[in-house]
Image (cartoon, rainbow, N blue to C red; front, side, top):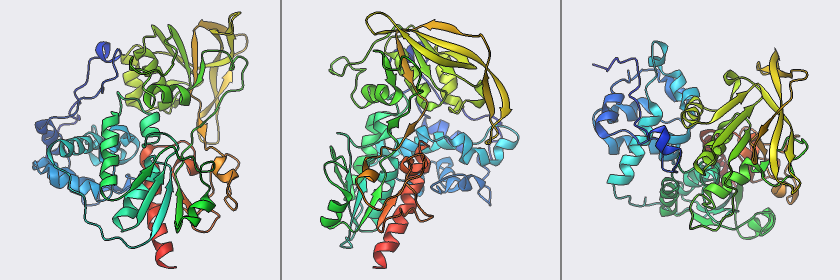
Length: 461
């Protein structure tokens, strides 16, 4: 008999008053017994609506059935037949708007905790099973991947399993892309990411770091080196600013820079020399997951006051509900229906205030979201010594500006067809470089789709 509890089994977590002072993972994970109990809530629906909500088509009822039986290794094999980064996806995927939103149990209660179970299975496997490299027969063909983020890693893994000699060219000094530089340790431990990447290296994927394609090498030179196809998964790492007065003051960061210093360059560890401002009061402008990550990092770095400034209401906030909930628990203050108009500084050029105006919601825009409208004569200031701008990013133009035949749209995103092929023969692209900033799992789905197309392209030559 299925477990008919209407509620998901809660995830054990660090207490808010403790975790907001450290960078250890917030969620502690299910025990074996807890995972089995939660897995028995799955009804094993014949039509599998949850699978239709998964961008990489994880066979969800099948793996959960194995968890309910205690067959955790078999569950891992089912997950990894379509998802090469299960420990990552179990932690950072927005399951609530993907697989779990389709779960039948969600009609009269809470959905099955699919993400938590995926995370459990991946963690269990890493702790309990000696990973042996797959035996793969080389097919004699070479493919270059630009970017070691989620899209590039997914594409590389699928191609390597088909026998391709795959090399990833990564601009930073460490592989992982946004998984390493963007998502904080307390949400996604870097050891987890490295283990997932090591599993790809074990099947023959080569990762070359400090390789800025467009400067160190061009795409034309990659072809001269014998690569028969190229996948661009370089992400969307170019920060967007608001264009307001004072953004050049000392103490103003893009969220990208701030999080890269904290995460990739380990500024939160005292033994590292990475410079970062340890502020007393910080304003974060934006309402997405990146804004939540920046705010929660600032709190952990010692800030007494951390403000999220967002021009719409909480209902319009694009951040995951879990991240908003965690931020509130940790003492982050939300200034909603508020918009910055100026950043003010002292006589030495350092930030000391941010000037804002009140907003109210007007008519819905073309996406259905209600457009914010400024309230007249509502200006006020907040005392801060740092401001972090988290209002979005766009793809860096370096690759397309150094490569003939690759087109981009007016947002700077690469143009691809349904097969993920760009406007240049043999060059494919996916992830944030194509969509703009999106989710890890959507980027992985694009990488997997591109791998299929690259295989068809090379096989037909």
